[in-house]
Image (cartoon, rainbow over all chains, first blue to last red; front, side):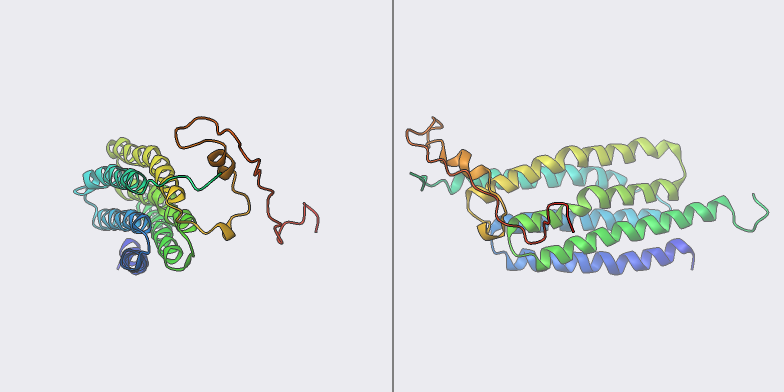
Length: 95
Length: 148
Protein backbone atom coordinates (compact mmCIF):
# COMPACT_ATOMS: atom_id res chain seq x y z
CA UNK A 1 0.00 0.00 0.00
CA UNK A 2 1.21 3.48 -0.77
CA UNK A 3 1.31 6.33 1.70
CA UNK A 4 -1.83 7.87 0.25
CA UNK A 5 -3.77 4.62 0.60
CA UNK A 6 -2.80 4.35 4.27
CA UNK A 7 -3.90 7.95 4.76
CA UNK A 8 -7.19 7.07 3.07
CA UNK A 9 -7.85 4.26 5.55
CA UNK A 10 -7.05 6.52 8.53
CA UNK A 11 -9.28 9.27 7.09
CA UNK A 12 -12.10 6.76 6.66
CA UNK A 13 -12.06 6.01 10.38
CA UNK A 14 -11.76 9.67 11.43
CA UNK A 15 -14.50 10.89 9.08
CA UNK A 16 -16.71 7.98 10.15
CA UNK A 17 -16.45 9.01 13.80
CA UNK A 18 -17.33 12.60 12.88
CA UNK A 19 -20.28 11.53 10.74
CA UNK A 20 -21.66 9.24 13.45
CA UNK A 21 -21.49 12.00 16.06
CA UNK A 22 -23.19 14.45 13.68
CA UNK A 23 -25.97 11.92 12.99
CA UNK A 24 -26.40 11.42 16.74
CA UNK A 25 -26.88 15.19 17.15
CA UNK A 26 -29.35 15.29 14.24
CA UNK A 27 -31.40 12.54 15.89
CA UNK A 28 -31.28 13.89 19.44
CA UNK A 29 -31.83 17.58 18.67
CA UNK A 30 -32.96 19.16 20.98
CA UNK A 31 -33.72 22.20 18.78
CA UNK A 32 -33.99 22.48 15.02
CA UNK A 33 -30.97 24.81 14.98
CA UNK A 34 -28.82 22.10 16.53
CA UNK A 35 -29.96 19.84 13.73
CA UNK A 36 -29.06 22.52 11.17
CA UNK A 37 -25.52 22.82 12.59
CA UNK A 38 -25.10 19.05 12.67
CA UNK A 39 -26.37 18.78 9.08
CA UNK A 40 -23.76 21.33 8.00
CA UNK A 41 -21.07 19.23 9.68
CA UNK A 42 -22.38 16.09 7.97
CA UNK A 43 -22.22 17.84 4.59
CA UNK A 44 -18.62 18.87 5.24
CA UNK A 45 -17.77 15.31 6.24
CA UNK A 46 -19.22 14.03 2.97
CA UNK A 47 -17.34 16.54 0.83
CA UNK A 48 -14.15 15.77 2.79
CA UNK A 49 -14.68 12.10 1.98
CA UNK A 50 -14.99 13.01 -1.69
CA UNK A 51 -11.71 14.97 -1.43
CA UNK A 52 -10.00 11.94 0.15
CA UNK A 53 -11.28 9.67 -2.62
CA UNK A 54 -10.06 12.08 -5.29
CA UNK A 55 -6.62 12.39 -3.68
CA UNK A 56 -6.13 8.65 -3.20
CA UNK A 57 -7.31 7.55 -6.62
CA UNK A 58 -5.98 10.57 -8.55
CA UNK A 59 -9.12 11.62 -10.35
CA UNK A 60 -11.05 14.91 -10.53
CA UNK A 61 -14.61 13.67 -10.96
CA UNK A 62 -16.08 15.08 -7.75
CA UNK A 63 -14.48 18.52 -7.44
CA UNK A 64 -17.64 20.13 -8.83
CA UNK A 65 -19.66 18.67 -6.00
CA UNK A 66 -17.15 19.94 -3.43
CA UNK A 67 -17.54 23.46 -4.85
CA UNK A 68 -21.33 23.26 -4.96
CA UNK A 69 -21.66 21.67 -1.50
CA UNK A 70 -20.42 24.81 0.27
CA UNK A 71 -23.10 26.91 -1.41
CA UNK A 72 -25.80 24.33 -0.72
CA UNK A 73 -24.95 24.27 2.98
CA UNK A 74 -25.10 28.07 3.06
CA UNK A 75 -28.54 28.26 1.43
CA UNK A 76 -29.92 25.52 3.68
CA UNK A 77 -28.87 26.92 7.03
CA UNK A 78 -29.73 30.53 6.14
CA UNK A 79 -33.22 29.59 4.99
CA UNK A 80 -33.80 27.49 8.06
CA UNK A 81 -32.63 30.11 10.54
CA UNK A 82 -34.76 32.81 8.90
CA UNK A 83 -37.74 30.49 9.11
CA UNK A 84 -37.15 29.74 12.78
CA UNK A 85 -36.64 33.39 13.73
CA UNK A 86 -39.85 34.51 11.99
CA UNK A 87 -42.14 31.71 13.06
CA UNK A 88 -41.41 31.95 16.78
CA UNK A 89 -41.77 35.70 17.16
CA UNK A 90 -43.09 36.46 20.59
CA UNK A 91 -43.78 39.69 22.50
CA UNK A 92 -40.86 41.15 24.37
CA UNK A 93 -40.54 40.12 27.98
CA UNK A 94 -38.54 43.18 28.96
CA UNK A 95 -39.95 46.27 30.67
CA UNK B 1 14.94 12.47 -10.11
CA UNK B 2 17.23 12.66 -7.10
CA UNK B 3 19.83 10.12 -6.12
CA UNK B 4 18.82 9.95 -2.47
CA UNK B 5 16.15 7.34 -3.12
CA UNK B 6 13.21 9.63 -2.38
CA UNK B 7 11.63 11.23 -5.43
CA UNK B 8 9.65 14.45 -5.45
CA UNK B 9 6.50 12.46 -6.24
CA UNK B 10 6.86 10.50 -3.00
CA UNK B 11 7.53 13.67 -1.02
CA UNK B 12 4.41 15.34 -2.40
CA UNK B 13 2.33 12.22 -1.77
CA UNK B 14 3.58 12.17 1.80
CA UNK B 15 2.63 15.83 2.31
CA UNK B 16 -0.79 15.14 0.83
CA UNK B 17 -1.28 12.15 3.15
CA UNK B 18 -0.41 14.20 6.25
CA UNK B 19 -2.77 17.01 5.17
CA UNK B 20 -5.58 14.54 4.50
CA UNK B 21 -5.28 13.01 7.96
CA UNK B 22 -5.19 16.47 9.61
CA UNK B 23 -8.29 17.55 7.67
CA UNK B 24 -10.16 14.41 8.64
CA UNK B 25 -9.12 15.03 12.25
CA UNK B 26 -10.95 18.38 12.09
CA UNK B 27 -14.17 16.57 11.19
CA UNK B 28 -13.66 14.17 14.09
CA UNK B 29 -13.10 17.06 16.48
CA UNK B 30 -16.29 18.72 15.25
CA UNK B 31 -18.23 15.50 15.75
CA UNK B 32 -16.94 15.09 19.30
CA UNK B 33 -17.82 18.72 20.01
CA UNK B 34 -21.34 18.24 18.67
CA UNK B 35 -21.63 15.14 20.80
CA UNK B 36 -20.47 16.58 24.10
CA UNK B 37 -21.03 20.35 24.22
CA UNK B 38 -23.94 21.56 26.34
CA UNK B 39 -25.74 24.30 24.40
CA UNK B 40 -26.25 25.60 20.88
CA UNK B 41 -23.61 28.35 20.83
CA UNK B 42 -20.82 26.05 21.98
CA UNK B 43 -21.92 23.43 19.44
CA UNK B 44 -21.68 26.12 16.76
CA UNK B 45 -18.12 26.80 17.93
CA UNK B 46 -17.24 23.13 17.42
CA UNK B 47 -19.16 22.68 14.20
CA UNK B 48 -17.43 25.47 12.30
CA UNK B 49 -13.92 23.99 12.72
CA UNK B 50 -14.04 21.70 9.65
CA UNK B 51 -15.89 24.26 7.53
CA UNK B 52 -12.88 26.56 7.13
CA UNK B 53 -9.70 24.90 8.40
CA UNK B 54 -10.68 21.31 7.61
CA UNK B 55 -11.70 22.14 4.05
CA UNK B 56 -8.52 24.19 3.58
CA UNK B 57 -6.38 21.20 4.61
CA UNK B 58 -8.36 18.88 2.33
CA UNK B 59 -8.02 21.19 -0.68
CA UNK B 60 -4.28 21.66 -0.03
CA UNK B 61 -3.96 17.88 0.07
CA UNK B 62 -5.74 17.69 -3.28
CA UNK B 63 -3.35 20.27 -4.74
CA UNK B 64 -0.34 18.24 -3.57
CA UNK B 65 -1.83 14.98 -4.78
CA UNK B 66 -2.79 16.24 -8.23
CA UNK B 67 0.34 18.39 -8.84
CA UNK B 68 -1.43 20.25 -11.68
CA UNK B 69 -1.67 24.04 -11.84
CA UNK B 70 -4.85 23.77 -13.93
CA UNK B 71 -6.90 22.73 -10.91
CA UNK B 72 -5.57 25.29 -8.45
CA UNK B 73 -8.14 28.01 -9.41
CA UNK B 74 -10.97 25.53 -8.85
CA UNK B 75 -9.63 24.65 -5.40
CA UNK B 76 -9.23 28.35 -4.56
CA UNK B 77 -12.82 28.95 -5.72
CA UNK B 78 -14.12 26.17 -3.46
CA UNK B 79 -12.33 27.61 -0.45
CA UNK B 80 -13.29 31.24 -1.17
CA UNK B 81 -16.95 30.27 -1.49
CA UNK B 82 -16.73 28.50 1.85
CA UNK B 83 -14.99 31.50 3.46
CA UNK B 84 -17.69 33.85 2.16
CA UNK B 85 -20.68 31.76 3.18
CA UNK B 86 -19.60 30.26 6.53
CA UNK B 87 -19.63 33.55 8.55
CA UNK B 88 -23.00 34.60 7.16
CA UNK B 89 -24.72 31.34 7.94
CA UNK B 90 -23.08 31.16 11.38
CA UNK B 91 -24.28 34.71 12.11
CA UNK B 92 -27.85 33.92 11.11
CA UNK B 93 -27.97 30.61 13.00
CA UNK B 94 -26.55 32.29 16.09
CA UNK B 95 -29.05 35.13 15.88
CA UNK B 96 -31.98 32.75 15.46
CA UNK B 97 -30.71 30.77 18.42
CA UNK B 98 -30.47 33.91 20.58
CA UNK B 99 -33.97 35.05 19.63
CA UNK B 100 -35.58 31.71 20.31
CA UNK B 101 -33.61 31.47 23.59
CA UNK B 102 -31.78 28.29 22.74
CA UNK B 103 -28.75 29.24 24.78
CA UNK B 104 -27.85 28.70 28.40
CA UNK B 105 -27.19 32.08 29.99
CA UNK B 106 -25.20 30.54 32.84
CA UNK B 107 -22.43 29.61 30.39
CA UNK B 108 -21.97 33.22 29.22
CA UNK B 109 -19.44 35.50 30.87
CA UNK B 110 -20.88 38.69 29.35
CA UNK B 111 -24.04 39.17 27.28
CA UNK B 112 -23.68 42.52 25.48
CA UNK B 113 -26.68 41.90 23.23
CA UNK B 114 -29.04 41.92 26.23
CA UNK B 115 -28.58 45.71 26.65
CA UNK B 116 -29.39 46.35 22.99
CA UNK B 117 -32.48 44.16 23.13
CA UNK B 118 -33.71 45.81 26.33
CA UNK B 119 -33.25 49.39 25.08
CA UNK B 120 -35.66 49.03 22.13
CA UNK B 121 -39.33 48.14 22.02
CA UNK B 122 -40.91 45.73 19.57
CA UNK B 123 -41.33 48.38 16.84
CA UNK B 124 -37.60 49.12 16.86
CA UNK B 125 -37.94 52.57 18.52
CA UNK B 126 -35.88 53.42 21.61
CA UNK B 127 -37.82 52.31 24.64
CA UNK B 128 -39.29 54.97 26.95
CA UNK B 129 -37.77 53.54 30.08
CA UNK B 130 -34.68 51.66 29.13
CA UNK B 131 -33.24 50.00 32.19
CA UNK B 132 -29.49 50.25 32.17
CA UNK B 133 -28.84 46.57 32.54
CA UNK B 134 -25.25 46.88 31.44
CA UNK B 135 -24.04 43.48 32.34
CA UNK B 136 -20.91 43.23 34.41
CA UNK B 137 -18.68 40.42 33.20
CA UNK B 138 -18.86 37.46 35.48
CA UNK B 139 -15.76 36.47 37.41
CA UNK B 140 -13.59 34.16 35.38
CA UNK B 141 -11.75 31.84 37.77
CA UNK B 142 -9.14 31.07 35.11
CA UNK B 143 -8.29 34.74 34.45
CA UNK B 144 -5.49 36.01 36.66
CA UNK B 145 -5.12 39.41 35.04
CA UNK B 146 -1.86 38.51 33.36
CA UNK B 147 -0.22 37.48 36.62
CA UNK B 148 0.60 33.96 37.67
